[in-house]
Length: 241
Ligand code: UDP
Image: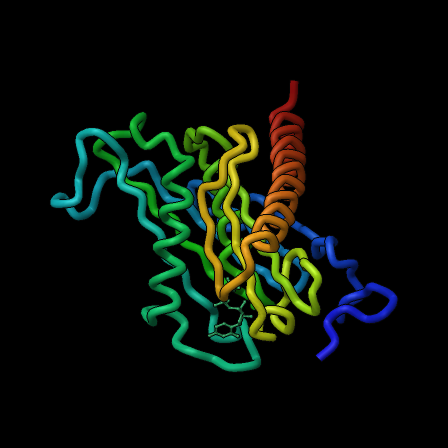
């Protein structure tokens, strides 16, 4: 199948190095301490954060750091294509773990010993790259909850189809079976905190594809900073002089 046409356009009209349209909204779940909706094209996810709060299971309590928990689920209506179990299957368990480890790397857990932070992420609409979208939503929700972080972690994927590196794969591109790389990145510290790869790639190309995903992460970080700044302005405006 042709994923990049002779004019250099992808199936959804994007250029190879072009990301899907981003949209974010802070404060979507009023009861949560922090929450956000994050969209990358037709992939739409919601994140809600509770904490720092009392540790529920005392055997997991740590005197040195906060306990971070994460649950990834897919809404039953999130995909029309093939529906697997929304939670509790191997894929959801793996993605929950990956997101938890990524968020743990940026939360200053040592500042909140003997407490627990719960991160819930749910896919509302799935069109590829849901784990990346969930990490971006979780970052916004954690910032909204006022949880101290060393940086804003962001995530983006990139793949390699028709001998072309492609940024931010949608479902059609993702399911083509080509290699794809998901990166989690700390922009201020210039550090990669997550790297997942789906298939084999030659070393020289891996470098290229990974760099492309990092550029995507940087662009998302710029957008997330704008959203947070705008949100703070709105809060100040509502509070009045
Ligand atoms: N997908 C689906 N049903 C499922 C699992 C996945 O429709 O039960 C689709 C969904 O669009 C998802 C894509 O397959 O975004 C790729 O899934 P993958 O496991 O690679 O994770 P993701 O790219 O979403 O992080």
